[in-house]
Image (cartoon, rainbow, N blue to C red; front, side):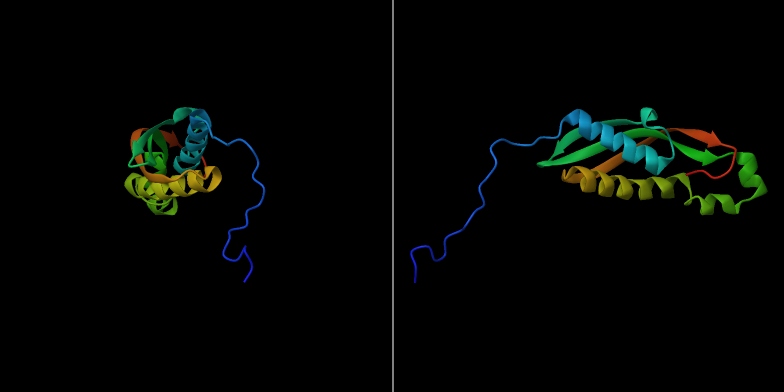
Length: 127
């Protein structure tokens, strides 16, 4: 048995460290939430808090919905767009958490969303 048996062999480490700024994480969270809710990123407010060593994301944003006249003409439009505002918000939580985690590498414990209003979209499809 050699003297190095059981030793951990490590690659040479690069000096320094990497950090993702709070502003970069916030911008990423705003973009992810905007995509999930069908609004512009500048309409989204995002904030961070510590949740037992993990990051908790809080989002405040409007959500895009079809116009009432469009829904009256075609009641199936609500289901085609992903369901009610509640259903879409629940789905947005999972989407935002997955996307922010995937792109940043940050470990999020949860995403809290508060819908602050609606953006009525009368034309074609709503994202």
